[in-house]
Length: 296
Ligand code: NAI
Image 1 (cartoon, helix red, strand yellow):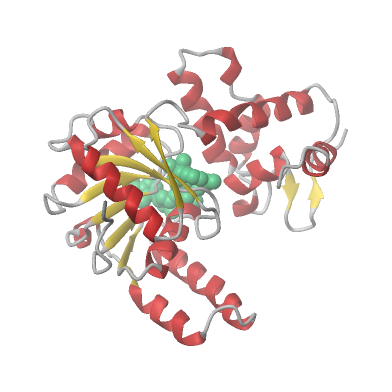
Image 2 (cartoon, rainbow, N blue to C red):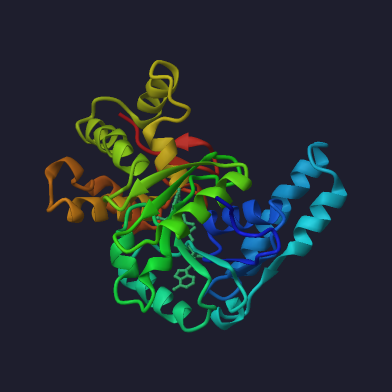
């Protein structure tokens, strides 16, 4: 089983939290990376964010300055989707909405070469549905990283109904070559981790809505007694409430409105307010002061 050749260009679409992290991982593995985002200035911002993170590592003595420069030189901002034509692997990490992802894949199919692999970093959407309607659905698969992508080892390699075994094997080997721990999964709603994690968020939110305890207490209990690295609220703030709410809504819909997966009104309100968590400076916690927003 061999992965993408080291000389292969990796394109990343969507330069938010995940796309930037994935671009960094691919560049660290030696690939030339093209970073594209539909929002003006977002890809430049994503690239600057990666470089700022690398600068911190250099300052701490954890990364030689030369390596930082070489890595920076490997990441290029792509001005348009058309500029991704030479990519051997495209990883899509845009908004978690099926119809938008399908549009991007349909456009991509017209641009890339026939042997290019098209992967989605979707957290919950059906890979089968993303690939459906394409001329070559067999080259589409899920390549699901976790947040923050440069740190988290696990990567789910998600098979849609039409995914070619050779494509899945190449993605598996590529993730391994990138220092990750890949696992095969099928295209069930939320795949493995986001499915198992749904009750972690949902029950935390229910406890809060029932005034069982405040946000900071619930997080501290799960961290200190439960042994989790983060409590549910700080983790949702890291993921982003727009993303987390979209994932819960998609899993809920996919399981025919099974009440176990019912999205939370509290989280819906946070999304409506634009209080998306760390990325907007405010979520359950206020990142300008460090205080929990919800008190008992
Ligand atoms: P984000 O909101 O930080 O970034 C998304 C980026 O995609 C934005 O910069 C936006 O301008 C861009 N975008 C939106 N529509 C586009 C289009 N049509 N073409 C090109 N660019 C477009 O979102 P985040 O958190 O990076 O999530 C991206 C994807 O990764 C989603 O599918 C999400 O479910 C998945 N994911 C998120 C995780 C998380 O913890 N946030 C973890 C693992 C997967």
